[in-house]
Image 1 (cartoon, rainbow, N blue to C red):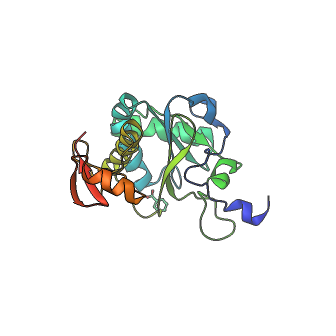
Image 2: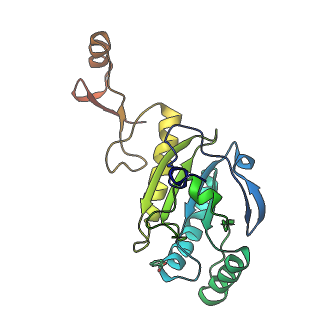
Length: 214
Ligand code: BEZ
């Protein structure tokens, strides 16, 4: 693999790179989930403290994600045996069942293709990445965190709901949007659209900033 390929970043709006991988739930392909949204996330390593808190936090939102037609998939560059032993320890010691598959990416194929490995040459720990892939297989959003800081599950839930709201209603969501809040109507692009917009009955601060309740 060429060095530039090792750090190739996927691109929002393009098809999420297909992969076939071994997981704690057996082999799977990304395309097996077409028709569902997928949240693919990486963690640095098994049996580490922040990652353990994150796994329990992802498990806590798994049912809500399932109701939103979202499949969670974890990943790190560890073996299936290590993943299984860690998941078992989380169940035994913390009483939390991990319901989602975890990819054992020992050959780093998925991690490299998704730009999950940052840092010095030879590093095998993935950073804390989250990829939001829609039901048609398109990559819609990415979040990257460093190893030192755990992710925010409320933000992950908020973003998946925002993306699904965008698809359902053809709208955008403003800063700090939460379900139930007003959404943003896409800005007009021509003088005729501006005139039309001002008569459409939206709550407009100016011609380019209009809100509506859905
Ligand atoms: C952790 O999960 O605690 C962790 C993993 C890698 C580096 C730093 C922290």
